[in-house]
Image (tube, rainbow, N blue to C red):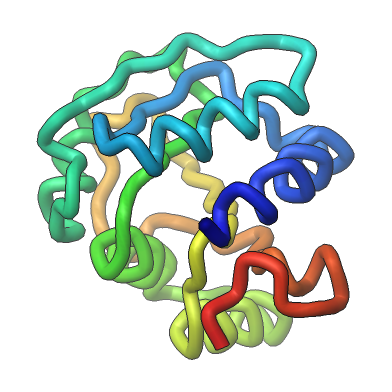
Length: 156
């Protein structure tokens, strides 16, 4: 499984960038739970975790609806789910890139969102309930192969 190789490297990257979540919404699928367990093994502080059946193979509007129900204190928030919904959600939330670097990240994201990829979005909102397409600033996008210099976790 690609995620088994990629998740420890991604956990280390997230720790180094201080992208550690306060809370996690995760699909109930075995592969997402295993990926999350591998991420958690690389972090010292454990976030609050909510496993949600509706995230399993959900399309992006369902994922967005789940995020909108997250508690205000659940920030930073990590969503662990499935493609194509995850890629579509990231694109929808980052539809208004500001600047060349963010446009470049969005272009890379739309080209390929492989297993264990990480899209980091920042929102200037008071509550998750205000979340809507186009509000996110895509501050980082990293694929497993970007961390290893090879193809670990990538589907190419």
